[in-house]
Amino acid sequence: MQRDQQIFDIIGQELERQRHGIELIASENFTSLQVMQAMGNVMTNKYAEGYPGRRYYGGCEVVDLSEQLAIDRAKQIFGVEYVNVQPHSGAQANAAVLLAILQAGDKILGLDLSMGGHLTHGSAVNFSGKLYQPFFYGVNKETGLVEYDKMEEVALQEKPKVIICGASAYSRDWDYARIRAIADKVGAFVMADIAHPAGMIAKGLLNSPFAHCHFVTTTTHKTLRGPRGGMIMMGKDFENPFGLKTPKGEVRLMSNLLDMAVFPGIQGGPLEHVIAAKAVSFFEILSNDYDVYARQMVRNAQALSRAYLEKGYQIVSGGTDNHLLLIDLRNKNISGKKAEQVLVQADLTVNKNMVPFDDKSPFVTSGIRVGVPAVTTRGLKEEHMPLIVDWMDKLLMDADNEGTIKKVRGEVNEFMKQFPLYPEMG
Ligand code: DSN
Image 1 (cartoon, rainbow, N blue to C red):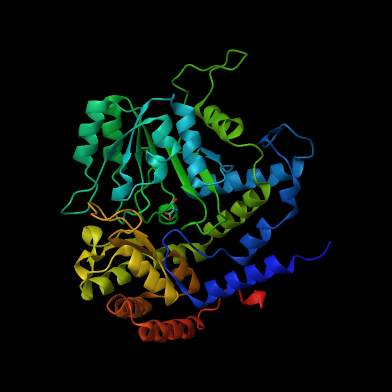
Image 2 (image 1 turned 60 degrees about the vertical axis):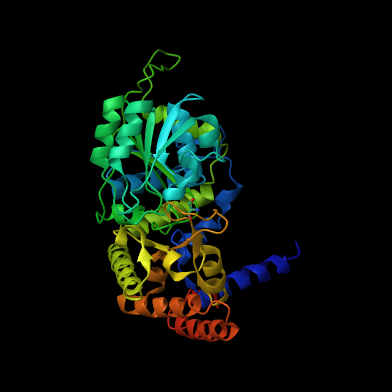
């Protein structure tokens, strides 16, 4: 077969882009080389619908080993009883949990997307807002903190079947015990989506959701630094409350319902090559190196936060407990869209983001979201965070000056040479 040089050249360009820039998108990271190597393997050739030991195809005895290893390692990391490593993404993981516990039209309660929530927590443009009836809680206008009183008020009024906590742009920890107490008052399940802070939770640096939330979902590629994918967990399995039984009359456990919701509910064949790479990343998370990494992420985020505050930037909630910051640019007279554009031109990659009570559209926004998982993997430490803020401030305060953009881009590219990325790739 002739080599497809065109696409490999494009992949090479992406490698160079990642090497030269400062990656500050809070949901991105750089996997290890061995995670990537495991992802590009012969298991992509294998159909394995079903689960280890109970598949719908022959020849699954080897992929069973790697999927079981991924499950066992994830159980060890989080100290949980149930793990499903097959969801192709965090959105799929959330879809499977909702499919397992809800009927069409049921009420769900999540954090408003415009306040930091996620599309799959009830947004009108997503399956979660179309199939189910969504209600929302938000954050306080003054403090930027989740309003648990409002969550309780809406829960008592609407009696949702599930309360969803977790966010895409919220820099503070969650009170899972309080959420469970609210859910118990109305007989709701609790689903925690820890896609963003999972890495810190894995190492005990943030509150653990597992004792309080019935279901916990995550992605594997953000702070967990694995391949792109999703995962569902339960601290403890339990008898399904819907009275569903097997054909032999045995009561199905919740784990059976979740497995069935992933396959055949919403997915077909699992991506066994990606599951092998998930297993590798879990192996890495169990190491001391990852412990050091997780702690450095928190230190870097806090150093970044201090540097922004010193330059007069407004951080929603005033700071961070995790790996990200949401910056409200309204006092700096620049939109999120314009900020993203000028920063990206200088190889500082961020994403524009709505801030709570934003008066601009999601296409323009008043803020940017900034995160440290990727720069921490590159090896940047606390002392480097003020440098990043200095460059950003120069760009944002002089956004139409091509000369400033060119100068900062040159400095950024030169600076990042100290932090090699995938040197093995040449
Ligand atoms: N796209 C993810 C993020 O950037 O946070 C959420 O799905």
